Length: 265
Image 1 (cartoon, rainbow, N blue to C red):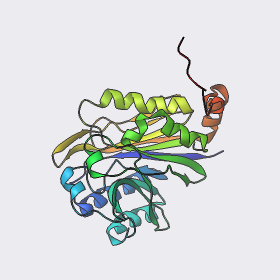
Image 2: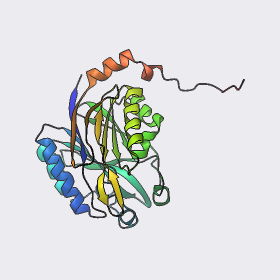
Image 3: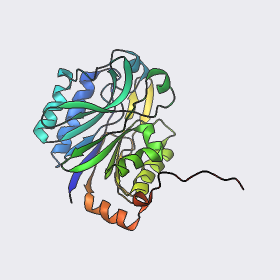
């Protein structure tokens, strides 16, 4: 069994300013590393900013996650921290809302594209075609971006594939706090897994965001939670707790691939 200290990092992003946002991300990773954190999750589209002008302008290409990420690579390497950060990217001719993963060895990949688009995103991006998980210190963690977490089957697919945690990079608008808090606690308790929610906060271009980053335990209880200020929500993932929870509450094991036809009587 394994434990992993994680942080949901929360800050404001600058629309279209990769250098500023990478710098903020690196600063937060340094802060987390000083507290022994091994994994930092940053909000949806944090590296590019979540804003129409950023989304419709030039975007980094996943084929060239190069020098612009160097400050984050350096922070990751120095602190021994894996970083998962949201970014709007190009994947060939397609525009996607993705997660960039930076490892302490200097590697950077974009293994996951958001599979559920909401609102204006549907006009600007195309959906990803596969789920994804990452391994950090022997702990398997599913990847998601914001609206993905509103669909129980998305987190369930990660759990059924072996994930003990669900990483959610999000950006919630004012008025969305009630649903945000329900969704991610529910994903945790339904699957007996940890949920790490990193929420964008402050103003980015034309829009305002409400933060609410948190880490939920496998019973859906918040172990750490932020309001709308910059900061880190830090908590420990313990795979033994996941095993004990799933042994008591067996929904993952009892999942049925089909419920058969519906009959109206």
